Amino acid sequence: MGRLAIVLLCACGSSPHRNPGSCDGPCPASSIDHVVIIIQENHTFDSYFAHYCTAAPGSAPTCASGPGCCEAGPVTDPSGATPVVLDDAANAAYDPDHTQGCELEEADGGAMDRYVTGAPSCSDPRNFAYADPAVVQPYYELATAGALADHYFQPISGQSSSNDMYLARAQFVFLDDDYKPDAIGQNCSFIPTAMSFTGPTIGDLLTGAGVSWAFYAEGYQAMVTASAKTMCPKAPPDCAFGIGVYPCGFDPSDDPFDYYPNLADNPKVLRDYTKLASDLSSLRLPQVVYVKGLGYHTEHPGQGTTISDGATFVGEVIDAVQASQYAPDTLILVTWDEGGGYFDHVAPPGPGAVDGEPYGTRVPLLAIGPFAATGTISHVQLEHSSIVSFLEWNWLGMATGQLAGRDATVANLGSLLDAGATGTAVPP
Image (cartoon, rainbow, N blue to C red; front, side):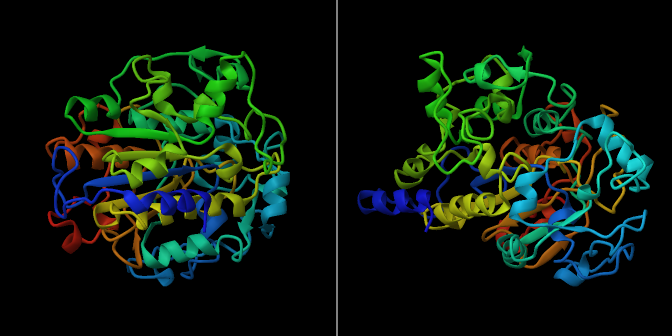
């Protein structure tokens, strides 16, 4: 049992009870009254699900039920190389270059042929890596019990922060990890330049409609306490990097809402991860929830970070939600912010509508809980802005595109969901 689940279990004895069928704010268009979005880091679809899917590479299956309906990773890449085994040790030891320049060069206009060789400053045999099935078995189990998207692309080729912004704005804001927020924790960030931006974000739209939401960040309170003393916090004892900066300390660049002055360090919406347990048990969970672990719990390659620690963290969050009174009306989404420079055999779709920025590789998206279409493989082209579109549709009058970004053009999440369970069918 995970740490969050233990805290929740201990707190539940005197917890209040929810009224079945009631809404915890403005009632949604569907039966989904809560969404929990867990954001992991830097793995492509192939790097995790190459061995889960069993259809032949390039076969483009049209069926939608089970591993036979998604393409396995190819046995060799276009250069003839075979994949290395991505286990915990390999993940901890090597972080591929995942700047936009390298990701575009390796993708080679959709040929996907320069990850191992051909791009001298970027290529590396370790970029062609498939996870050991035993290590990612927890994600295979989630895919089997829930739904898996096999055409969910990182919205912009390049590093994490630029992709995270699509979860908040559904549009291009800046390139790669060029900026960090002007917010608590910036003194402990490796990113040199602090910057703030103007909204609106999906958070602003939700707040304006009376829909509660919050971003739960692991390590945030430790950073607040340390920053008051102009210090960085101590690293958690189980973080291999050993000092209180990323991946062992909270980095504000992991929260896209922290880039906006009205939301930066706003206690109404930025909460320490430990608060999630008490909000679940005291029935104060917001309707829209984002969860981000410390770097060593996100599976980000390098710096001693393991896949197993990340999968355990994700399992802890899911178990806590599903053990709570919120389980019957909560959709849980698990995704990875970007592909991290790893190989994927499916070519990105090209420039995105509205902003013209180039898509990056596929990353996994899992839908979990009573609303997920069990065992389904969705082939619909999706991205982070699709989550924004769903939030708009579900809580903001069934009208998407309110941020005037890609949320106006991308597909919604209905292809992952059971229309019988959602009541009103969510658009695909």
